[in-house]
Amino acid sequence: MSVLRARRRWRGVLALLSVPPLFLVVSGAWFSLLGSGEPAARPPRPAGQDALWLGHAWVDGRNGEPELAALAAHLRGGGIGEVYLHTGPLAYDGTLAPSLYPRAAWAVGALHRAVPGLRVHAWLGQRVEPGELDLGSPSVRANVVKAAGQVLAAGFDGIHYNFEPVPDGDPGLLELLDRTRAAIAPAHGVLSMSVHHIEPASGVALVGNALLGSTKWWTPGYLTQVASRVDQVAVMSYDTAQPTEDAYAGYVRRQTELALAAVPPATRLLMGLPAYHDDNLTHHASAETVAAAVRGVRLGLGMNTRPGFGVALYVDFAATPADWTSYHRAWEAPSASIPWTSGRAAGP
Image (cartoon, rainbow, N blue to C red; front, side, top):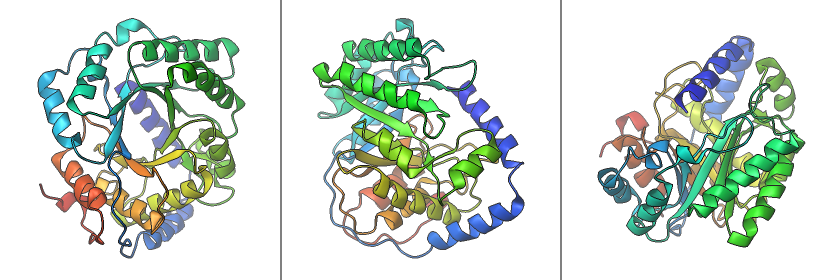
């Protein structure tokens, strides 16, 4: 995953160099304005509505009982009821080698025992670009669906797809989701997916994606089509290139508002929180903090009481004590308006 992530970062750096500076200045000022003000107080939330992405070390044998105890301490009795456990990556032909997840049965069973009620999804993904995974290929889609069946047989509660970058309007993804949902229904498997950013203004997906040379944004209509085919969507609301916490909070606020409107009520909606600390042109660690993301989510949510709405932390192996503190204090704290506190200043 680190190689794939580095490649995505490098493409993002090259793409940003082609974006007119005036656009970055104007959009940054707009997002900073959206990120101002205090989030509204909100009523208590039921437990178990949030999620956490887990790294591959849980299924390949690197993590064991000590790591399980540390993770369970963060999860027991809290908001996280779903984990997306990295089990791939898929090969470019869509197949999944069982040798990639030799300890999957142990991981799923151990997580279930440590945190009763937790649902463990197999996170499957790959790059979607020429020469890599081709969602337009019927044989590739058939292999991906077969891989989904493999991991359900290993004990997972559901499938979590992460394909990047999927072009806005891509029909191959829709066909794959339809086929996967039909295939896992007999086993009552849950289908979820990490989804792209939503264009913050009309036309941004068309123009911005063309400038970048790769898909960064989806239109709300395409997100609706994707979300109507799954049980959960998690918006990857990070890697935004925003330079300050206020601007990033404003960006997340806009993403939250758009997602609430685009995702059908029957589909669970989660907003991604950046519990990792890369520092480059597409992700400024001082700006993209868990605290700023939570602030943006709360500003966008307002007093909306949408059932099942939650946040998803990315990712367990990079999360710091300050990240967990920001999540627990600013998001799980139920009824009061939480004053704005920079993620850099968050204490234990």
